[in-house]
Amino acid sequence: ARDTASVNIFPAAAITKGLEGREMTEFGLLREAGAVAYTDGRHTIANALVMRRALTYARDFGGVIAHETQDADLASSGVMNEGLYASWLGLSGIPREAELIPLERDLALARLTGGAYHAAKISSAMAVGAVNRAKTDGANVTAGVAIHNLSLNENDVGEYRTFFRLTPPLRAEDDRLAMIEAIKDGTIDIIVSSHDPQDVDTKRLPFADAAAGAIGLETLLGAALRLYHNGDMPLLRLIETLSTAPARLFGLPGGTLQPGAPADLAVVDLDEPWIVSESGLRSRSKNTCFEGARLQGKVLRTVVAGRTVFSA
Image (cartoon, rainbow, N blue to C red; front, side, top):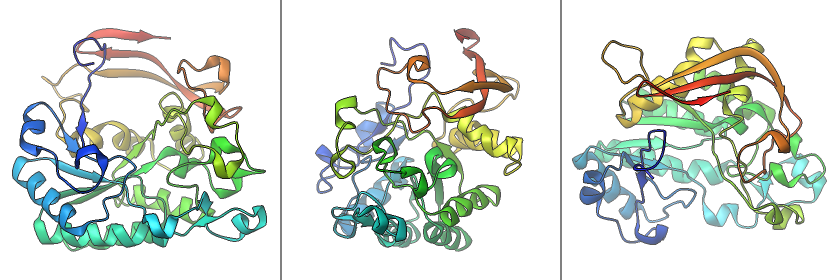
């Protein structure tokens, strides 16, 4: 992909072979091949010894462990946030503790090893508190949040709308507001698209049977700018979480306008209104949870290494 793509591709390698959480991959060789981080995606590593070794190896090779935490037993058959609304819908819930318990274990191991740990896609006020305490203690820890968990809450599930079945699940409004405050105070470092295409047939099922995930690349900017237009987030902080901070976190070139830096730029109209529609999406997958949303802000031009690769 790096040889044919018109944009920069920075791969993240698997932590464990087959994403099975048991046997570690060859960190050194993967780092030499260009891996900027190590992750098992949405698969949480249950074995604490494996995670300790992964953090140790990542420290020695200069990489970052990016881990999405969800205790498989606590999450079990859950399909949305555990709470009153899930009870009303008759759906099994995923408690916040399913995210918190493995996260706190990981943060303790990050303190123990000194390895760089990125808490990927946290979604609850509990998780924010845990990350904040780890940072205060001096652990080499960062955190990210999916744009869905900043823009939506559990009420958006409505009457079993499967495009809102996500990982992590949409939480309560108090959790969403906690995410916003955590970005503003620096506890959360980056906002991610959580781009997770799914075949439309896997969404045309009862909510409990539908695949989890939604596309997010094309709506990331517009959805994030809601926070700016609503007065919830300063524009410069928002830009930092989408560009400068990710580049710094993963040791990437770019994310800055300093002289001599790569000319990787996006020209944006902050105010251009648009409505998210299936027909207007370029992605082959159409499973967006922003269908019909009125967003404000679009990318007009993308420049990579001084060359225009996209123009609206």
